[in-house]
Image (cartoon, rainbow, N blue to C red):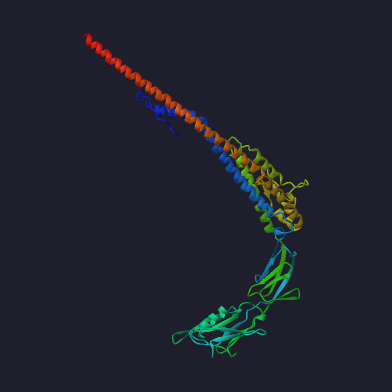
Length: 444
């Protein structure tokens, strides 16, 4: 507020500025209450926005559970008695058991050259290029700069021709390190055979010892399966087996419903519902010891009741057989063992109870969506109502600013007039006193 100048007690000796400020403090009490209401309303909006965010997160979590035919509800888990045989099952697999016998693992084709040389020795023969030969395919010419051992290995790797070269230090001669070259196929399998020669087809580096590439072989119930890699994809529908490089022996493989993973998913969902119920309960608390930011709020009470009611299927049954109940405090409880037992016994029924069109997750999602919808959600509407209230309060506060400014101006004018009048009276009193003093002096 702009202050109007006044004579601060020059005549009266009063602290008029302080008096006016005290009067204004009293006059501003209604406005101060309005400002307090704005702070309260803003706190309610913040709380409601947090609830809305939690509801949206709950709706998203529920949405991920609302299909009994796809997603995590159809997942299976594969186990193996042999650490060398890994198992991965997808939703297209069928629960069952079978035995896998490892015949052999897949290998790359390796060529280890005989002669050792310094990295700077020329080793490519009459020219500076070599030939990569594969049966049934055109030869690949690999050019080097000067034909040295180091340049040859680098050129092989740069050619990206399905083989890779490595130099292996074998010792030193005359103080110079000596290396032999090892070249192997980039992938495993019996079809990866290759030969590396000079440009005329003659042997390089004194010839080479060869470890032939090979396919992986397993036996399942007397049926042989092969793979160019150590992975057997869909060897049984929906099941992929992966062998380690040293895998041997047999493996008892089991494919079953992943009750543990499903139990963990459901527990996490129940925990999320309970966290929201706790949040709502804290905000709406009305006890003598605890009063929430939104104490007694009817909108949040309805959301709380709807979430608690969602535990009950519309057919009048309950979720108790699947491990979910509601306790005397209004929170959900989850019995993982009971859930796992039901899931193992009848996964289709459990999936329908949780993820079907009228399942538990769908009912929770419906409640969360209706409350948090950005257009007509009940919590969204409550936020809008409180926002409107803040706008109205701020308008009233602004009007009070004008009213108080006028009041301050009026008070300052009144006290200024008082000081002016007192000053005049004091001047007149001084003049009369001087006249009386003069009369007294003349009569003596």
